Image 1 (spheres, rainbow over the protein chains, first blue to last red):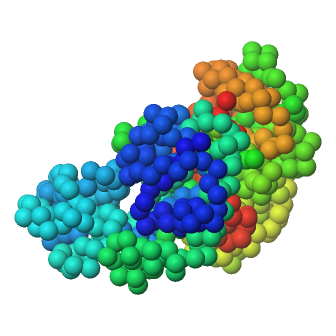
Image 2 (image 1 turned 180 degrees about the vertical axis):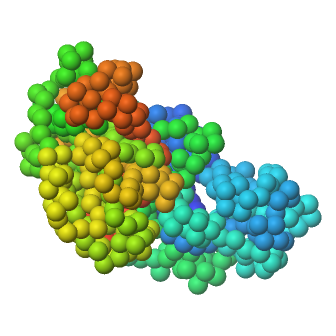
Image 3 (image 1 turned 30 degrees about the horizontal axis):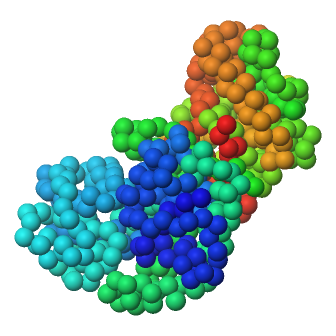
Length: 273
Length: 273
């Protein structure tokens, strides 16, 4: 069993106990960026992994979801921000820079732009990692979509007058949580081993949610973001997958399927033990 | 394998080919009313059955859904009607009669009354089968919720000035299909046999959807409803379970869970073959 793991702060609550040897992972942990893990799970180099909601939908025929586990926000997510020189509803016809590394966030942005704000935006890819932020200022744009640590840092810098949290905006629009990532197994992976990994992930999450303070300290050390901001960020994330999360997930996927951005399909889960 | 089957018209497209011997059911068919089947699946007298969305949620810990199969409407359903002497938004404080035989429809009515129409209604159970319709007139009420054949017949009688189709009203409110029923297997049922039943149901549905005219004729003979109305009714139903159906299903269930009408939970599916 090869289990994919992202080193980002939003995954600490699920992998933290495994990283510390408190829960033994019944699999080899493979660390990568979201895009790397998406690709490796799709081509069989991983058996189970956290992957974006959109990557799940793109490869749904080869995958099954692990029950009761996801990364969502039910309101502000803090780490997926549109930073603008104008408000979102005044971005019609302007250029918006986005990171190449988060297709889910870009699709969410496009959905909000088109359906909620009623604007047509011109999306251009640009490096938006923390080290790229200084260079960003010199690039022609009216707004930039930043995710992860870069979002937490760039908001604190206060360079853009209009900050739109896409998790919060989705919630205001639909009344639902937004599911950024899920855990999935390949359908050809050995079932019992997948269930063992699932059980270990749930056990590790239980420890993580009971120890968010420890994880916030680790996050502050790893990212240069204030401890208070890290704690607030972790407290605002949700790792369950109950009806309201599924409602948010499928509402997003049916919108994407309706405009051809992902194949239409259904959710398939690993069978209960 | 014991497979539950409802004799109602809305199930013809899924069971029609089995009833005619065109698709061999790899199970013993057990016919019952919706409530009977819900109870039998919950207590283990059935292995697989069509059940209401609400019954699934009530017994989710013992059940798994069959992928890609459900009964929904994406707009008017025609067979779940609120017939009123006043419009829905003027029903505050009045008595509404409902059938005891459709808990899903009653919960949908309560949700719409409270959240969409902003009215408090006093719900009372009354017999509302086709044979009871004459007696209904003598019972004190401002509106009545009728389902199934009775709805098709009572609308045609034109006795109530205000007809609200709950499938259509849900769609206007949420933009989503409404899922009335799903197919589920007990978790302790033999997996391979469940998959065989699932495959047979999908095969039978394929025949049914290609032969709606034949099924409409059968329906007209069985119910005294006009052939044209039967054809329209069957054409308006949908038997898939893709993202938009799941979005409708989970949006309904998260609302019910939020007010304690069903336990909070998740969707679990029979694992892919």
